[in-house]
Image (cartoon, rainbow over all chains, first blue to last red; front, side, top):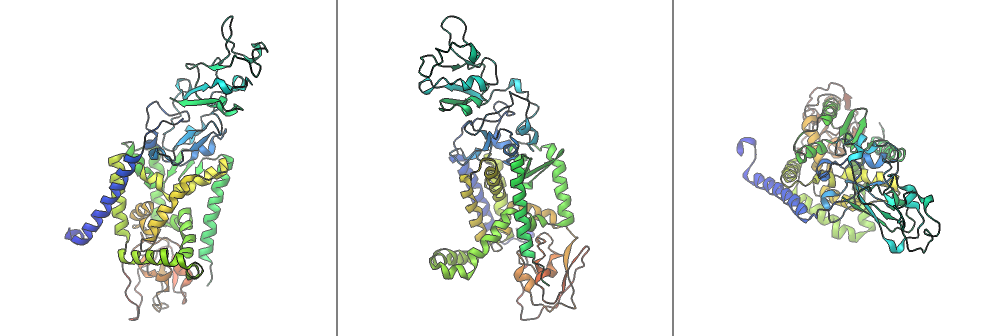
Length: 204
Length: 287
């Protein structure tokens, strides 16, 4: 100890400070509750975003739809500051027209631009029928063909809004649109444009 | 000689912050923690270290940017800390509010229940660079052991940058701005404030200690040893010591501005000089 110019007293002091710092990290990681928020495209399935992201916010800046935000403080302390897709702010337009800007500016590769869009699913949207007013905006805004469907009593479900007989899409009609789970990519556009906010997007 | 160095620094840092707001409004990939120019990615050294620790490997695309940051530190020293860093400008703005006697006179309860105890504790603890380094190394160990991204969550620069982006993009402030109080409070208990405990500054200090250029040089014939330079220096250095302790010098140029005898000059290749120190001046603690 004395060879590097540290007295026993200061060695103890530095050791206690370092120990307190380690304790702070362990305490915070113990308190943190893991959650799976809705992520922008480019995150590989099962990837630990909290580890690879440096929370610089470049993806939030460049998102043309302004749909991304950095996760605010919550019980999931570990993920604070990582990018999440918030359908209340906007939906990901990557399936409508080629975008990939968030992955392009990511400095650490936490958002991978080499990941093909076709293989990715961000989440699954679902419509709560009780509040739906049959406005058909989700039909119009959905970028994926055949993800939002309308039940047809005599035949395959309708995939286009103008095919539906007007009597069935009245405000108080019993029939409501529904979302096919295996077609939905979870871009959040339907949830963003829904005027009565009855669409929830559940992350995968 | 009145150069208005302090005001210039504040306005440059305010302009940098305003620049980030504009960048966020125009959707440019420029935030204060990370800048991408072409294929070059510049991130904070602390962010680089933490990312390497957490992803168990070095991201090769970040290495060229890190080398450029190292080169800048070797050539210019820690100019980032006093000319660009918005967190240090927050601290510079908070410092007079917290320490000036005006506040004490106007808000006596603040002085009595917060400022005086804080000052007492900080005098008793006498925390310096060594303690900052110990805490930093402990945090690095904690990050590696518990996979908890401490630096990027609590970094004051990151907090300022995140809120600037959120303000520009979504027109609102984030709740995690409250976390900024943590680093500011920690800085209060260090002898030279946030400058001594900033983890990024500590990393820059390692590299900048080899910096030999663009440092203040003292003219020994003109210096009368009044030590005003040490009083104004954010790191508490005499102007003559900056050549020896280049890692501590923040290149704020305040010593040049304040010297009543114009004995301090900025030199490209400064020489080590000894100034006559009169006996009335108590020897400063050399860090």
